[in-house]
Each structure stands twice: as structure tokens, then as C-alpha cells.
Length: 507
Ligand SMILES: Cc1cc2nc3c(=O)[nH]c(=O)nc-3n(C[C@H](O)[C@H](O)[C@H](O)COP(=O)(O)OP(=O)(O)OC[C@H]3O[C@@H](n4cnc5c(N)ncnc54)[C@H](O)[C@@H]3O)c2cc1C
Image 1 (cartoon, protein in one colour):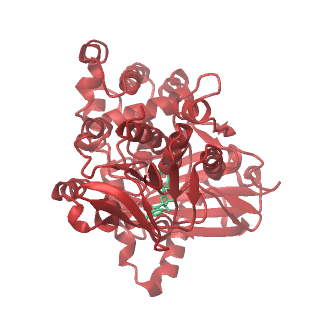
Image 2: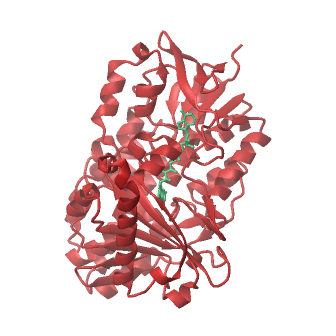
Image 3: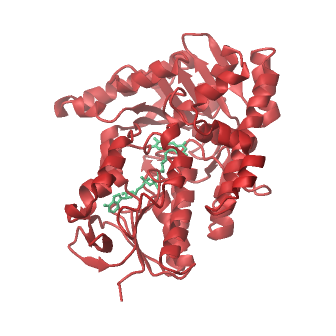
């Protein structure tokens, strides 16, 4: 008998939900995590009197308690995990610094369409019908989810025709059909940096589902940072009888004749199993973990090489000794872009010291008591293409990161006409190298493979069985079939756990 029914490598969002789902169904599960705490990017850290959120700006697909979205259903109903979710107050404030555009957008489909129309009169009808199409795509995805991989083709054709029609196209191609005025399109595209690739290459399916979910049900965050959620899922795994080992890196996924036989850890221990769920990326698994290397089929390498790795991030975290009101910060989420030529903005992710895109959060605007009275927590995030920070010589690393951080804060101050630098009590800076060290992701990637139409959620779902290159090895998390982000990685863990139970003949 194997030591474990399933071994999960990594306790990020995907690994934890997989562990919780498997252990809830009675599987003997071991989760091995190289770090000393759960969550991967979903965590928290303390500096002085501030507890910072390292990654999450907002979570999609949570919804209110009375109308639960997929993530809330997964956590509360399927896994029995309680998280104190807080809805963030507005969709976003977006400032285009060279175009004199400054908009604050509400959640709610009608409210959003009204607001766009307020800024760009005459745009409402086109925006509204665009959002109707987004709703149709989301309905189709929900149908596919409910059909558990066996959709009725007639239902798809009859009821979800627009989903099928738009699936092979990019956001830009589909949006162009609606006659939305250019200025309104700029407002509509503000969330593009959450997916992090230009709309000229972004899958419309993924974009439309994300946009509609955010606008219809709002964005949410756990009250006590994302660590609250990770700790709650971890607790559920343990209560279900699962085992989690921290400070334990998996160095080898042992494979014999095309089948998983176990893992070897950094402590030299070997555990036998026929099923591994890997929360690290396929790129990392095939290049570093599968042992012996000869067990990795050439098609597996070809598949990961055909994909484009997503970006990494650079974040400045500030604890300020003044309240948001005193600082003049009235909103939670700010997108500050130089302009809205998204191809050029994306190209700037390769430019080390000249950030033209930033997503900034003032946490107190969603959770007023997240820091002591009279103080404020902020974070400023930009993206970098893989490898850009590798060009920085070790002796220049500190000065370059301080320079970029200063630019980010300065850009925000100029765009918002506020003054922050005199009020900084704590500052922490994370670069792509920090994220690479922290989770071991390839090139510090914080997003999985880029979701272009040919490699987005639908093609990945359709190819899932064909891509089982090694029997017993499946993937969960942001690099898996649902693509990246909190909701996708959490939900992927559940699906992959259920598929693994099916492999085991349990369901
Ligand atoms: C700055 C930033 C902002 C973000 N903002 C948002 C946002 O607002 N909304 C949103 O939805 N998403 C956001 N994201 C993306 C989101 O955080 C990720 O998509 C998601 O958390 C990825 O989860 P995952 O399951 O892939 O696991 P990861 O978080 O990648 O964790 C993987 C885990 O596996 C462990 N591991 C890896 N290899 C091994 C090994 N060999 N042995 C043992 N353990 C191993 C790692 O230590 C880690 O704990 C953001 C990310 C960052 C960094």
C-alpha cells in the first residue's frame, strides 16, 4: 500500500483547496510546502505596527452571502471554510496621466453603464449590450462547469451560441463589433492589467467572464489579509485528517514507466503514492522535479515551451503615519496608466526603470481598522516581463529597486495631487527576485501562462486529458487549466482533486 493516496506539492491556493477537497472525501493526503506557512502568494507579513497584504487587490467570484459566487460556494458550502469577506467599495478609479482622464467607477451593471455614459455621453447602449454578451459568456462557462466536462452539444449550440462564436477571438476583436466610443472603451478596459496581457492578444472568454463577475457582484478581500483565507483552508485540511509538512521542499517527483510512484523531499525522505497534484508550474515540474528526466515526454516540453510565461510583479508596501482622509485618499483601488495604448503599456513591462502602469490599493478604504488609528496601509504594484530583473547586477540591486519604488510613489503623488513621502513609517519592496525566491515560481512569475485565445480556459479544458503526459501527475493553481488569479487557482484545486478521485476510482 502506498504511503499516501495523494501527495500535493505546494500549499498555495490551488494546493490547499485540492488538499481540503481530497481530505474531505476521505483520501489520505500529504501536502508538502517548502515555505514555513500556507498560502503561497496568499499570505501576510508584518513590519512594525502594520500587517501587509502581499498580493491580493480583490477577489473575483465571491459575491454576497445571499447570492454566493463560485469561490464563496467552494469555501463555505463544499469545504466548510469560513472567511470574513469584505466587499471593496468601488470598482476602480482610473487616471490616464497624459490624457486628462480621471474616472471613478462603481460596481453594478446598470450603475457602471450609467457612469460610463456620464463620462462619455451616448455610450450607454453600446456598453450595455457589450455587458450582455459578457453575461452570456459567463452563463455558458457556468453551464460547462455544471455539466462536469460533458456538455450537451445541442444545448451549447442553441443556448450559448454567442459563447461559441466569440471563444476563438481576442478582446479587441470582439469589442470592435460594438461601436463603443474610444473614450468609453478606455474606461471599460481598466481591469486589463489584472490579466496582464494586451487586449489585442487576450482571450475574450476569460476577460468577459472576469469583467462581468467583478461588475455584477463586486470585488472582495478577506478582512484579515489573504492569510486569513489560507489559514482557514489549512485548518480544514488538518481537521479532515490530512497532513501538512512545512519547510519541506519536494525535490523529485518519482516516475517509473510513465507513472508516478512517489516523491523525494529536500530532507531526503521518500513517500510513495500513485497520485501527485503539483501546485508548482508544469515548467518547473518537467524541468526540475520529474525524476528521472527521461520520463518527461518530448511533447510535455513542447507544450510548456509553446506557451508564454506570464509576468512577474514589483510591489512597494507603505505603512503611513497619517489617516487616508489626511492623505487625501478617498478610494480603495487606483489604476494609473500613462495612456491606454495597451500594447505599448505591455511593452513597458520590459523597461526596468520607467513604470507607466500601476495598480495601487489603499487598504483602509475597504477595511478601515486594518492599521492603527491615524495610519494607512498602501501598496503599489507594477508588472515586469520574465528576465528583466535578471539584468540588474547584484551590486546595483538595492539602488535600482529604490529608484523604481520612488518612481512609483512619485507617479502616484503627481497623478493624485497628494503627498505621501513625508509620512512613510514603514516601507517594504518586493521585486521579481523576491517572488521567485518566495514561491519558487519560474522567473518570479506571479501570473501563469498568458491566456491568449488558443491557450485560454476553453482550449485548456478541452485538452486536459490529452495533456496527462505522466500518469498520476496533475496540476493545480495559477498555471493550471483555469488560468491565474485567486479565484481560478482556488477553484482549480477543487476540480483537480475531483479528477484525481476519479482517477483513483473513488467517484
Ligand atoms: C503582487 C500580486 C498581486 C496580485 N493581485 C491579485 C489580485 O488582486 N487578484 C487575484 O485574483 N490574483 C492576484 N494575484 C495573483 C494570485 O496571487 C495568484 O494567481 C495565485 O495566488 C496563485 O496561486 P497558486 O495556487 O498558483 O499558488 P502559489 O501562490 O503560486 O503557491 C505555490 C506554492 O507552492 C509551493 N511550492 C512550489 N514548489 C514547491 C516544491 N518543489 N516543494 C514544496 N512546495 C513548493 C510554493 O512555496 C507556494 O507556497 C496577485 C499576485 C501578486 C504577486
